[in-house]
Image (cartoon, rainbow, N blue to C red; front, side, top):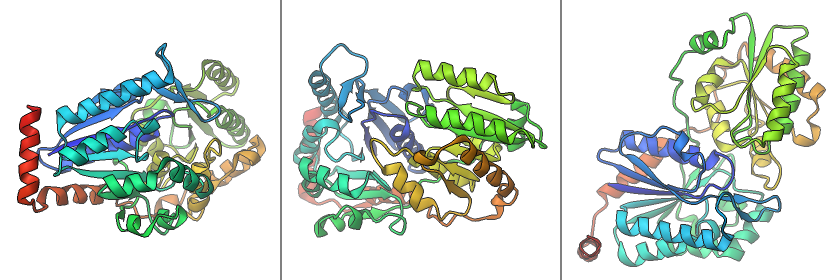
Length: 411
């Protein structure tokens, strides 16, 4: 089976990390699966991939401060880069001839770049199944609904897509209701559950020994994902850890993120050097190992980080991003019922507030491991089941004839 995965990625590491986790699980679960990832992530090459998984790197775009699109590296206009990306995607589809296409988040792709590929598959590859993969929350309904209507996303999903795989739970956030999906579209939706992350590959003790942290010390891990807009969380965390450390043995590990601007990165490193017991690193590929070794994690409320924390039942403080989209704010508010989470919104983020919450969570960390997560984490097996259903699906004679004719022409 050939699986093509599209992940546009203009901001942060979230989309590509989520799709890589899915691809890795599918590759290890489905025999003879070949996976080709098409992505614009500038960090794609930093992640290890299994044999049987490869990728095509699209030219990078970025999100501007106003929420529009800009070119990250090339000396070209946005329209030129979008056209280049669109042609690369279509060429990949025509050459790879996927049996299944997974499209991450945007039904028509970034700036509509997926539409020619979707049309090609619909017209020429009758056996290929197209699935839209949605994380639990896109943005506030007041923003998502008019945006989907303006771009024609409801019609795009209805016309091109076989199913919509929601990486979340109806009980947490019902996309059908919240985003006012039409009745026919609701029939395509499958709630898969959240994505449980891989078990730690190293023990808590091993990681703490590597960091030089004894069992009598508390470790606070701070992460802001890619880091582009994480400076305020990092700065407040340094001061909060410093305050808490005045009356208990606490060490801090800050993962600044590869996209934290150089000026901000320098400021954070200087501040950390002035507070003893806090070190700063740029990036961790094996984040789960360090989360597992920590007593408390301070983070934003991105989808992947939240899933990692839920997988580990980790005592945590969520400080969600609220601009330019409210996705993380909504997720943090819905997850506030999880017994080992505490939420601080950015408007309330002050070092004394964070310090008090951190002290409370350090106390709570003594018993958190015995508290079960109330959230459905069965997303990966259900996605694999969906693809296996595709392998066993009965094929009509007309579909087979058109499929073989297209494959012969492509060769």
